[in-house]
Image (cartoon, rainbow, N blue to C red; front, side, top):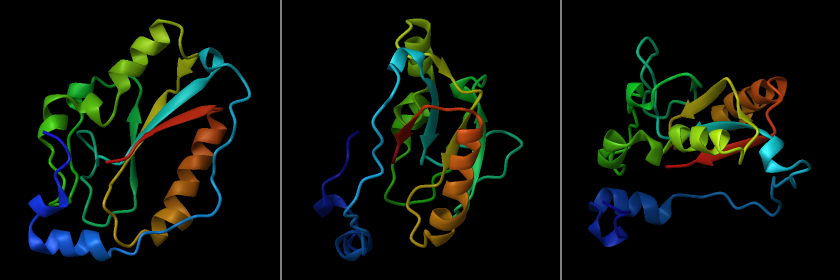
Length: 158
């Protein structure tokens, strides 16, 4: 199952995708890595809407986040993405497609990355009103990761 062609989507979604006012930025937040990757502490962020038992599921246009402990088994992740344009079949089979925690554990064991942070984060994708995310929750998570001394964040947008 891959990404569908625009012509394969229903007319309402095609209209939305064609006319959605996407943002363009003239600058990039890219920061060159100053230490070798095999010395870096890494955290994962996904927009797949994953949550765990005991956490509230995401709502439509939900700008909040869920903390995912590094110790979690990926089969315990629950999919909660709320977009009708998003097909969850693949991540139901293998959550690593959208949250590659098991693959990063392998990289850590092989010494390719220094270590994984003790927590990671999940957001909802397809947010049509992202101001609360831009002004509040994304900066809040950035501060948490900074306090955790995370060097690199791997983002899997869906």
